[in-house]
Image (tube, rainbow, N blue to C red; front, side, top):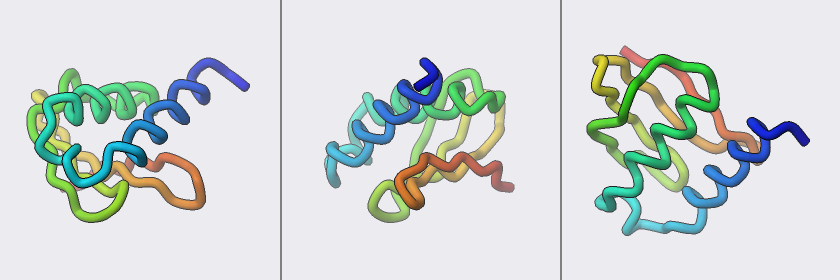
Length: 82
């Protein structure tokens, strides 16, 4: 397994195990920042995150980009949003 894929799985596991308290935790921004970076998306640093559901977040980056980060079929998906 590649290092990038291993890190993505680790980030997904962190998101999955953190539960509802994660949405208000400072580490959430750091975890989302890492997941976005591992997916090769420009961001810099996540400044806000809104939890939409279990393992489903909308992250806003310091550079203005917004991404939906969620888990589907055991994979972490990062999609740019408006």
